[in-house]
Amino acid sequence: MNELKDPRKTFGEAVIEAAEKNQNVVVLSADSSSGSGLGAFPSLFPDRHFEFGIMEQGVIGFASGLATTGKIPVFAAIAPFVTARPFEMFRNDLGYMNQNVKVVGRCAGMTYDQLGSTHHSIDDVALIRTIPGVTIINPGDPVTIRKAVLAMIELKGPCYMKIGSPKMPVLYPEDIDYRLGKGIVMEEGWDVALIGTGTVLSKAVAAAKLLEESGVSVRLIDIHTIKPLDRELILSAAREIGKIVTVEEHFLAGGLGSAIAEICSQECPVKMKMIGIGDQYASNGPYEELLGKYGLQPDQIKETVIKFLST
Amino acid sequence: MDIKEILKLEYTALHIRRSILRLIRAGEAGHVGGALSSVEIVTALYFNLLNIDPGSPKWPQRDRFVLSAGHKCLVLYAALAERGFFDKSVLDTYGALDSPIPGHPNMHKLPGIETNTGALGHGLSIAGGMALGLRMDKSQSKVYVLMGDGELAEGSNWEAASAASMHKLDNILVFVDRNQLQISGRTVDVMSYEPLDERWRSFGWSVRTIDGHDFEAIIGNAKEIPFEKGKPSIIIADTIKSKGLSFAERKVNYHYWKATPEEMEQAERDLDAIEKKLKEKTERSTGNE
Image 1: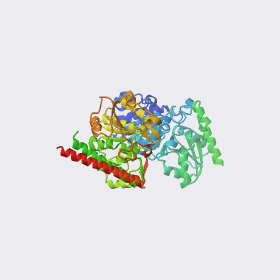
Image 2: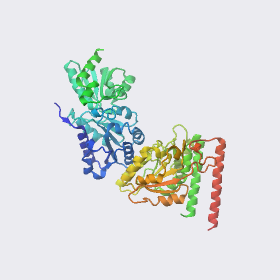
Image 3: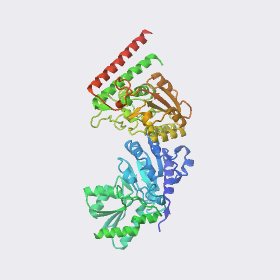
Image 4: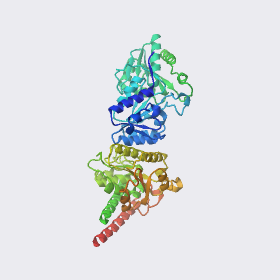
């Protein structure tokens, strides 16, 4: 059994680690730092933490302005409130102005399970993916959350990173070679490419194990950077295997599966199956049950893959 | 202020108005009303108030100017050209494919532009972040913002207003170009935010109201910021929309002007008349010496 770690706590510790190394890192809060694992930041760096209260669209603008003076603002809050709500600010003030700002949507996907569709964020990748120049990072375990934070601080330019809320299993060793924009082949295989991302990467990992036990050879891929997408890795899977299944806690419209289909359909058309949430508001309830409602539990993923391979 | 200095600014304002006509001739149309109403404010900024270097537009110690009401960009392009940020021939590309001077400013295309504005209600937050960053760096630089009065209906402005006050950003000065008109009519009829002074004061700002075409009032007041220590400052500048064009002043349908040849001729005559008056004023002032 893998060790479980709190993604928000991991994220907050990584930001503090980055801030210790880089004096330009500042944290902006829309009444959201404590809930983002950054509760310790204000006392550690009192001159580098700015509280704004619940005004996310304004905070994005302030972050843009701070970035013009060489600061590296990190703004973490509940995912829909840093993406859907201030979308125009994200697009104009960060994307269009190409500002070195790091926006982090936490409790993303359906991890705010009971709180329903206002608090779910299953459209954030679709929205932010339309903004030219924004890097979108969706790490799937605590080790890569930390590495992603450190890498995104080093990267010059606007970034959107999403993390969940429930504790998540450690999937990688500490010394994993993690690079933004480069997917990770977690298992080699030849019958199907199973591509996962973010909060449900661990479900894809478990599904791959079940499939292997059933005699299906799976190439398991972690796409932790949805934009820019690791084009070569995707195309090599398409060319070499010819069958791709994507797994994401996101709408089918505009997410990882869509991004992969955009590349494959034009450069190497292959059979694809996308697992995610269809054109509906996700329901409310216990998180694991919600994942089950949308076919995102390992046994369901396995069944979907087997059915896909048999057609 | 010295009369010669004021006359010089008035001549510069005239040149800027002429450049705005040049832009309209090139692009055939543009947001002229709010550009002309804010000519004196922008002239005062670029030819007196702003500590800037056209040869080094990204100089870190510069003052910042954020044109929150991005559609007023004709006056910004004209002022930047006049100040030497780029050659005036660039003004003739207005409206052309890939022109560096789009219908709303783009910092990546033109030196001297600080922000990509155009969508209203963005500038004040960005300016607030600049002010915060400059204060962290213990910089003496100031952040100046120009907003429209119609723009104030965007709720995001009031988030920014609260935050600037809460964070005691007394290195910001906002000008509101209160020309009292927006596309659909009078601001007080479309969505009134009057009384503006009381509203801004209640958000924690230090407020002054002036004649926005009076250089002495603009510069004299702007040089006194912060009006109160620890508070952001705002000047509500009463202006005349389309100022300088006899046929368009205070008329709502010249918010965006598609110029007919007759109107353009009249506009030239109007600016010639202003020049004539300025010459007379200059002669009087030199005669008095």
